[in-house]
Image 1 (tube, helix red, strand yellow):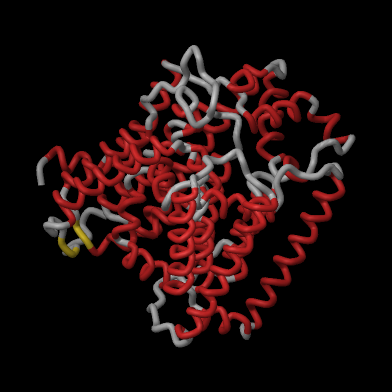
Image 2 (spheres, rainbow, N blue to C red):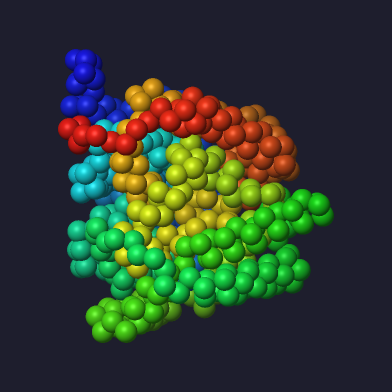
Length: 488
C-alpha cells in the first residue's frame, strides 16, 4: 500500500467532509435560487407566509393540518430570525432556511460517521455510502437551489432514527418520531414502525414458511393499486403530471403492476408478522405508539385550522400511483436522477441487499418493504428519509466484496456529474410549460414532471453509466470476496 493510500484511508472522513465543504463554497460563490415566488418556490411561499405572521397564525389557529405537520422547521427558522433581529423578508427567510439546511447537513454527516463505526464499514463502504447519501442531486443541488423546504430535516432525522434503532435507544426514537410528526409526516410512522418492531442485529435469514400465501397477498396488492389508480385517474384527474399517451399509458401501467406484484410476492414475510402478533412486548409497544399518535392527533387538531389540507394520506397514495405510470418504470429513472449512481448498485446487488435487510428482523424488513412499494412513485424527494437507510444497508451487504480502487473513483465521479451541483438552472426566460425548456432545466430532475425527452435522455445516461460499471468491473468480476478487515 502506497503512502498516498495510507494517508487517504487515515484521513478519509476529513477528505469527504472537505468535498462537501468545497461544494458549499461553490454554491456561496455562485448562488442560484429557484425563480418562482421571488426565490421561495411553491411550497416555500406558503412557509414564508406562515413565518411572516407566525405568532398570529398560531394564536388564531390559521394554519391547516398539512402545514402544521411541518411547523417544527418553520418555528426553528422563525427563531433564527427572531434572535438575530432580522426583518421577515423573503431574502432573509431564504438565507435562514439555507443556514438551517447547512446545519442539518452537518448533523447528517455526523450521523453518517457514527453509523459507519456502528456498522463497521471498511474504506470502500465509507466511500460508497458517502457517495450514495451525500453526492447526489438531493443533497448537493436541491437544498441550495430550493432551500425553503423541509426535506433536509427529514433526511437528517431518517439517519438519526436508523442510528437509534441500531443502538436500541427507544427514548431517542420516540423523541425523533415526535419531531418528525411536525416536520415531515411520514417520519412519525417510520419511527413508530421501528419502535414497535425493534431492529435485531445479526439474525440468520430463515426460509419463509408461509411463502405460498404471498401470491394471494400480491394479487390483493395489485387490486388495491388498480383501485387507487382508477379513483385517482378517472375520478380525481391529476393533470399536473406528465400525461402519458395511450400506448405509453398501457405499457407503464403493466410494468407498474408487475413491479408491485414482484415486490410483495418476493419480499413479504407473513410468518414474521404473524409471530409478532403473538408477542406480548410488541402489543405493549404498539399501545404506546397508539397513545402517542392520539396525543399528536388531538394536539394538531386543537392548534390547526379546520381548513381542508391540500394533501392527505389518500391524496398521497393517489399521487404515488399516478406518478408511477407517466412513463415506463419512470420511478427508476427518477430515483437515479435524484439519488445518483449508487441507486444502480442497489438494483444490481438487490439480492445481497434483501439478505442483509432480513438479518435486522421484522421492523426494518417492513420499513424497507413499505418504501419499496411507495418507491413506485416518481417524486423521489418524498422518500428522502428512507434513502440513506437503504444505502447503509446496501454497503453492509457489499462488505463481503472488495472492489478495486478505480471502481470507487468511478462511483464518486459519476455521482458528482449526476448530482448537477455544477449545473445552472435559471435563465432570463425561465417559465412557460413545465414539460418544455427552460422549465425542464428544473423539472427534469423531478420525476412526475420529467418530460418524455428528458426521460429518454436521463434513462440513457443511467444505462450508459451502468453499462460502464458493468463491463469494466462487475461483468469481469474485478472484485472479490473480502479477505481482510484491516482498513475498517
